[in-house]
Amino acid sequence: MAVVVLALLFLAACQDVTPTPIPATATVQTDTAVLPTLDLAQIAPSAMPTPSPMPVATDTAVPPPTATTIATVEQVIVAPACFYTYTLLETNTSPGSVLSPGVPFLQTWRVRNDGTCAWGAGAAWVFAGGDQMGGPDLITLPPAGPGQIVDVNLALGAPPTPGFYTGFWQPQMADGLILQPPSAVSINVITPQVSDTPTPSVVLPTATAVPSTPTATPAISGWRGEYFNNQTLSGAPVLVRDDPEVNFNWGTSSPGEGLQNGNFSVRWTRSISVPGGVYRFLARSQDGVRVWVNGTLLFDEWRSGQSATFESEITLQPGQLLDVRVEYYHASGLAHVHVWAEPQTRYPQWRGAYIADPNLQGQPVLIRNDQDINFDWGTGAPAAGMPANNFSVIWIRTLSFMTSTYRFNAVVDDGMRLYVDGVLVIDAWQDGTARQVSGTVNLLGGQHDVTVTYYERVDVAQIRIWWEPVTGFE
Image 1 (cartoon, rainbow, N blue to C red):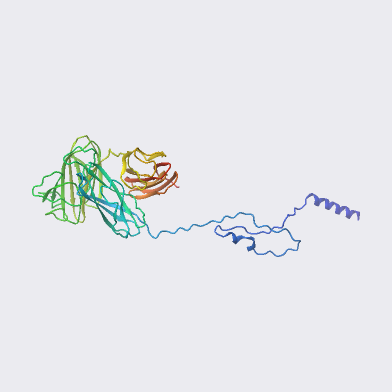
Image 2 (image 1 turned 135 degrees about the vertical axis):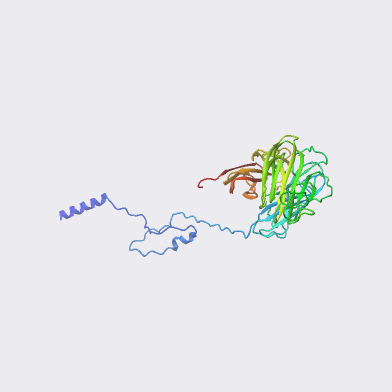
């Protein structure tokens, strides 16, 4: 018996050395994993099956799970039924872009509805800024379904003071949405028989869609136009006339009396004196075109084909007399040709038009060359004569790019938009403090038109634009 008692005491002593822990409360094993979209009520303890009774004394009540569950709210985005956008295809100024003070003219924009919504009742062509030139605030926009092309005609008048004028108009839909970018019209107002104008402008003026009326013995004051009923400028011309500009859109019609609808050619010649500097000569035609300046061939695109634009730059000395020759031929189908030149010294970087209105409305207070779009005006005005708040700016520039995907970036306060060749790349047109926004676009190598619109509401004003090619994986 003593031996048994000692053995029991020995076993008790061993249990005191390594006691088994006893839980303070009973634990029920449950699955607490929750899908993000489930409601919290779906995982409440009351929703779980009741465990079978245990043959033990009543334990402390089981607390609900302590794990924190965050419900994720899924945002449902409903795609719009359709969208609006447009492309400017062509612009014509009749009777021309070089005008005497007070002369009325007709501006025509040929535009295409590139959206999926139709332009219906209530759509308008509205004045967006720059020089209004006696035009209305808005006119009715011709109705157009997706993909359709319409002509917008606006009666304007040359201002009474000589100078270079540019105005901007753009479509506005019935719901108030304004389509970007604005479409421009530019004219040069000169005093008759005065060659030294206060502001140098286009050498070969822009656009007319109406051919001049031939005369028996024309007095040549503009371009001497010689018209031939063949594609090779051969033989005697059927028609010789004074053409104020080299910019015609004949469609499928004849260019003049005695001429065929197709299979014709034209030679235009003119001598003109211009201010010195770098000039960009451009030509848009269907079919062949070539241009000489003082005997130098600037481009030779003597071939049939679809409408295309060609350009070449040349440096001219001040007061240099230019002998310009343009040759054109048309084979068949639609016929049009437009040759002009632009001085590159006035706005060598960004052409900035500053408007004392936050909605790009009204005439600019000033137009200037801005080397970069990188401004932090704080609470001050961007220039003398401009307000510190409630103003807007339109910057325009043609830039060369290599073939690549480019990311355009902006830091802005308040709103801005950026377009490349009329395509909206960044849309941040709302009030807000300084923030960075960006957008990407695929570009082929060559020149592309970049337009930036900006507005400032109140307080601090700043905008900075830059871009870089996108490479590698992002």
